[in-house]
Length: 589
Image (tube, rainbow, N blue to C red; front, side):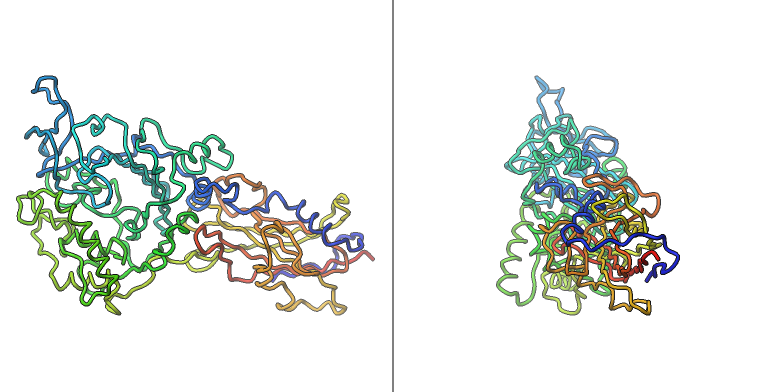
């Protein structure tokens, strides 16, 4: 609580009380440039998504799948690298598939590829595709992954120029943003009525580069899927930005010899042990509204003493069902399944069967490569140590948990964690240095005097210098100064219920009266942060201020509350701490 000066104040003339509408208009005009909510410029779902994501992750880079921070995804068959290129040994040099060992020596040419060592588990894409590209851009704790994936309608790879490394055409564009400290993640896909994209040029981020990037926002509207139809989070559910599977990881799974050096993505995709208790929250109100039902039901689990859980967090979504089953070469199943579980298990096993059908015999357990199963209890993806497979009992225990049939053994908890209130939990940043003082005005709106309230705050959650998802609501109550000038009690101030203003409507705007004695200002940003302007990086706490017309002889009681725009299904969350300020405005003697 900050007590205002009660004597020695500048002599200011008292004004008669003006009508409520006049006061509200005056407060609005005095503060309007900083009273605005982020991500509300327009209703287009893609631009709104981009504005929300920028407010949380900071600037979004262009999607550039051929830039310096990108990699090509290769194809491996029978332990060799495969490329589609002209065969100079045949008349006309037709396109054929060349097979080369880890030293680059040609092994053979084939006219088709029907199986590969590490078929994709993604579903709905070519199992043994090649020459897709992935780009990774990282700044501080935030990384963006962009995938330009080649695929075909029949899910097969063909001896067609489309599949060559030099052909820029591809069919699936997607992006993932992730903050490794906060666990905030966002998913985006290219539009689904577009069959061909071209990576010759980079792709603009949703919402453009800023609120004012008219051209970028227009181009983004035409590029991305407005329906958020793809349920990305069902597979990317392991509290990481990537799913660890042999297709995307290439030689990081299975090979620890010369092939690892030749075929691998190396450390391009960073490893991360995702504990079950880590924060994990999806950003994007449009995406969450589409997939919120399945997300609300999802659980993370960890079985104490089980060999898989030293490194993994698995869930009741696809990491625990499809990916785990393929990793250990075990069929999904539970004891005494319900009807719903029976249907789901049949569907998952049916989805895994074509993956197995497209895997080479060489990569199977009995083949020369023996990289399937590709995850073993003792050494993870390092299969060169001859580790034993997961036992049937260990798999049964894991599968029971994945299908929500494992009880207390699974230590279930919600997969997605809540939106953190400012100054609570992992967000330790709070407003401070509150100060209030009288000021004169040039008879603005009929008022000659006012109170100027200032404070400082750094929105430092997640170490994002441009983070812009926190605003302040300010409730101001005007009372007569008591004769004894006793200090105010806590109950004299506007309450949290006043600040939350359940009766408030967006149509009322950013300033309005709750009752005859309480004024509410919504969504105050820092000083100078004009509406629909992106925030520059913060080098330290920012300065905040509001100005309230005042009348002498009155006591002003103020509650300041920070709130976070969650950009999910929870709307906003308010800070819990009391930030109370008061000032007694004396009349001239």
